[in-house]
Length: 381
Ligand SMILES: Cc1ncc(COP(=O)(O)O)c(C=O)c1O
Image (cartoon, helix red, strand yellow):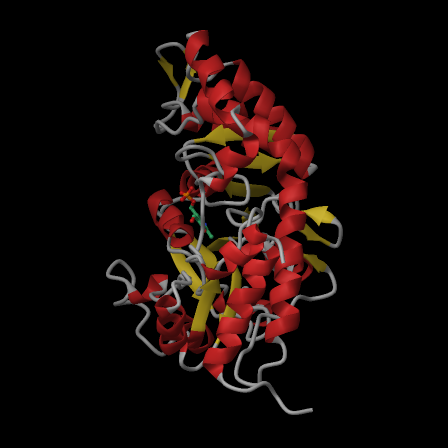
C-alpha cells in the first residue's frame, strides 16, 4: 500500500476540509482574487454579469441574478413573484431554517408540510391539505442535493395557481428527469456559502428564472430598489454578489460537474458498504432523481452514540439538523412538537458523514468501516 494511503488511514478525518479546494486549484484562486482586487471594480460589474450568464446557461434558465446569500435569493424571488403580508407559503418541515426565515422576511407565513419517509424531501401527498385560500406559493427544497418531487409539486401548484420557488441552496447541478433543479419552478434560489457544492469565499447567492419580469424585479430589489442612480422605485434591500465572489464562482463553475461526480462516487461507496447494516437506513433516491450529494446522511436510532464513537476515532460528523425550524422560538408556538412527526423523527436519527470532492476513497472506506464496527454486525444473508 502506498505510504500516503497508509498515512491517511490513521490520520483524523475532518467532517469537511475547505482548504482542500485552494490546494487543488494551486494558486488559481489567489490569482483570481488578486485580479479583481487590482481592477478597482468591486460591485455590480463585469465579473457579476459574466457569472450570471454562465450560471443561467449552466442551469438551463434564461436569467440569473446574483444576490448576497441563499436566504436572500429565496426572499427576493418570493417578493419579486408578488408574495407578501397576508400570504401563506408552503415549506418543508425538514429543511434548514433559512427556507422559513426567507418566507417570514417577505411578511408572509411559512406553512410546513412533513417529510416523505422515503426521500426525506417534502411529501407532495400532504401538500393539498395544507393549502388554504391564503396560500400563494410553494418552496420545495432539494435537500442534501436530492431533487424534490417536482412533477407532483408543479402539478399541485398549477392546479391551485401557486408560485413555485425552488430552494436549490444544496443542489447545484442536480437533475430532475434530466432538467437542472432551479430551472423547473418559476424561480430557483441558490446559495454560494463556502460549504456548498458551488461555494465562494464568503456569502453569496443567486436567483435563476425564465421569467424576465421576475428577474428584473430581483435586480431592482437587490440594489435598494434603485432603477437608476438616486431613482428609488421600491423599498429594496442591499443584497449584491460582490465582484470577487462572482469571479471566484466563474473560476469554479466549469469544475462543478467533475466535483459533483467525485461526490457521487464517494456516495456510491458509502451506500454499498453501509447498505449491509440492518440498523442503518438511508434516504431513497427515486429513478427520476440525479442528486449531487451535498451531504451524505445515514439514519440510526442511536445517532448520538454513533457520532460519539466516530469522534473517539477522530472522525468528524455533523447533524443536519438537530432542531427543525418549527422547534425554534420564531415558530414553536404555532407548530408544537409532535405536529410534524416524520421530520421530527429524522431530526433525532440523522447523521452526516464526511463527504467532499477531494476526500480520498480509502478514507471514505475507513469511515464506512468505523460506522459498521460501531453499529454492530452486518445483516445476515
Ligand atoms: C436548504 C437551504 N436553504 C437556504 C439556505 C440559505 O443559504 P445562505 O446560507 O447562503 O443564506 C441554506 C444554507 O445553508 C440551505 O441549506
